[in-house]
Amino acid sequence: MLQFFKKLGRSKPSTFKPVILVTGCSSGLGLALATLLYRQRNYRVVVTARTPSLPFLKRRFKEDDRFWIHSLDVTVEKERRTLIKNIEEKWGGVNILVNNAGISYRAVLEHMTEGDEYLQLATNYLGPVGLMRLVLPYMRSQGRGKIINVSSVSGMLAMPTMASYSASKHALEGASEALWYEAKPFGINVSLLQPGFIRSKSFERVYYTALAKLTSDEGGAYADYYGNMRPFIARLMNRSLATPESVALRVLKVIRTENPPLWIPATLDAIVFYHIRRLLPRRLLQPLLFSALPNASRWGLGETRCRRRRTHPTQAATNQKILAFQRTRLASSSVGMSDDGKNDSSGANTFKTERVRSSGT
Ligand SMILES: NC(=O)c1ccc[n+]([C@@H]2O[C@H](COP(=O)([O-])OP(=O)(O)OC[C@H]3O[C@@H](n4cnc5c(N)ncnc54)[C@H](OP(=O)(O)O)[C@@H]3O)[C@@H](O)[C@H]2O)c1
Image (cartoon, rainbow, N blue to C red):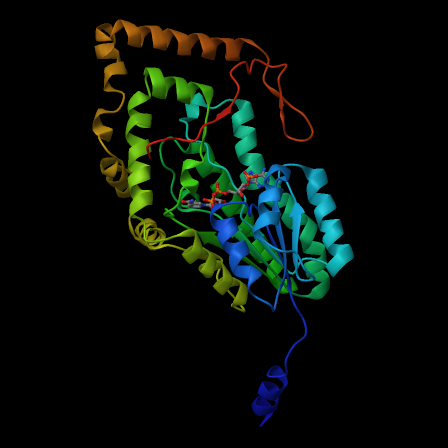
């Protein structure tokens, strides 16, 4: 009988419309999720993008009393604070946070600079964590709330040429796991959505460092890595069954689920990797994955000690350029960071980070 009255109470139409905040809505998964939420009348939604992308969003969506477009660069603390303050003034606070914005460097560890590392971490880790800190007090006061952090298969497994990206997603996973325990007693749910490859142009919006680009174009010790990994990733991406729209539907399901789990592999390949990682001992897993990489057994062979004398003259010249660049970097003081996370160009960072859209992938 008691159950019956409980159910009756639940079936009463609720006027409460949770406030959802989504970051990085100008393309890919964020745009697909914004499009999906635009049609959901039972939520109030704040979609955000960096200032240059705002006109695109404003053309795409019509703002009203439940759909709001706001600027946000997740790496800038002042912008994070302003956004949350504005939401609190307008709608009380954020009930559901979706940390989606992210960037991905495609460079081997040796080819990253301090500035590159910082930008990767600021976007994929420090920014999301900063936002979580700002929304938690309101969620705690309400005794409920949901944080959905978009991670990646790279948060479970690392891949060559994606060291820094993997590190950023591992960091996000670690913090989210700890927060899961910290927030649970307050009725706040934390989830990590882990997509694998998504069939879209998004994964081509990767960042190359100066050295990665130089090596890709002219050769060098890591030329094979770039030459093989780029088409390999493109192939996996193009063959993937998952689209930004299908992953966005998965996010909506998490939003609607009362107690979603912490780890949510969001695509078929992610589910496979999730189980492989759980079931296979690491000493078997790494050689297995290495052997699955295209031509991996031959990577860097021309650069090993025994073959160095045979290096082609053009190749040798490129190697010299790379060495000179690395020496300059080591000799001078480390690259400084300003408060807003931008590179301080007074350092040795003479090669600027370039954002290059890869073609032909
Ligand atoms: N695509 C995949 O295959 C894949 C796989 C696994 C995980 N993921 C993860 O899924 C999420 C979305 O990826 P996606 O593929 O949809 O990427 P995407 O198409 O490149 O979109 C990334 C979004 O993040 C925004 N962004 C970048 N830097 C920002 C900053 N500093 N502040 C605010 N917004 C910023 C971009 O906006 P701007 O217009 O301002 O550049 C863009 O809207 C990411 O966290 C990514 O790591 C993607």
